[in-house]
Amino acid sequence: MSRRGFMAAAPISALFGSGAGGLPAAEPVDFRAVVLPSSPNACLAAPPGGNPAAQVTVPPFRADPATAFAALRSLGERFPRVTTLGQWPEQRQIQWVQRSGIMNFPDIIAGGIVPQGEGSGLFLFSRSLFGYSDLGVNRKRVEEWIAAFRASLGEA
Image 1 (cartoon, rainbow, N blue to C red):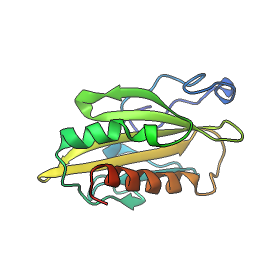
Image 2 (image 1 turned 30 degrees about the vertical axis):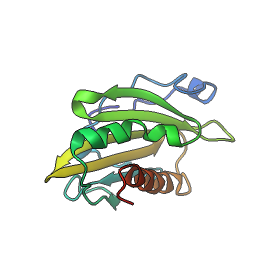
Image 3 (image 1 turned 90 degrees about the vertical axis):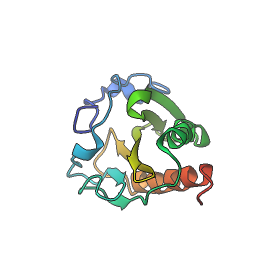
Image 4 (image 1 turned 60 degrees about the horizontal axis):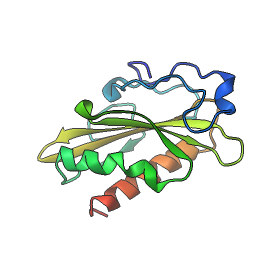
């Protein structure tokens, strides 16, 4: 992903791969600088004040950043067709690809933990690599992942 949060254009071969197959190498995301595309195929969730473009505000969690990052790292295991693309523990970031069940379209999900008061804040950024509209899939995914993350920390 570039500093603005978007993975380089994926080649058409990405549609024929599995897991991370055919996708460009992942890079850390500067969540505070993410600029959303003009197309409705992405969703950014951020802690309060994390990014003015965020469509979802995630209240802080009581868990310390180390505990929250451990929960974030295991989050992708809860969902079907998810493969880890990259991890940057020193930045408390991780990225996954989740492929659609029918057409194998790859969507990229990036997550990050930041200190927030005495707890932690969560960034989640989900975007489609192909197509203009996602019919709300990325927003729904972000909301489901936030709920699963909250439950994994016992803050449901």
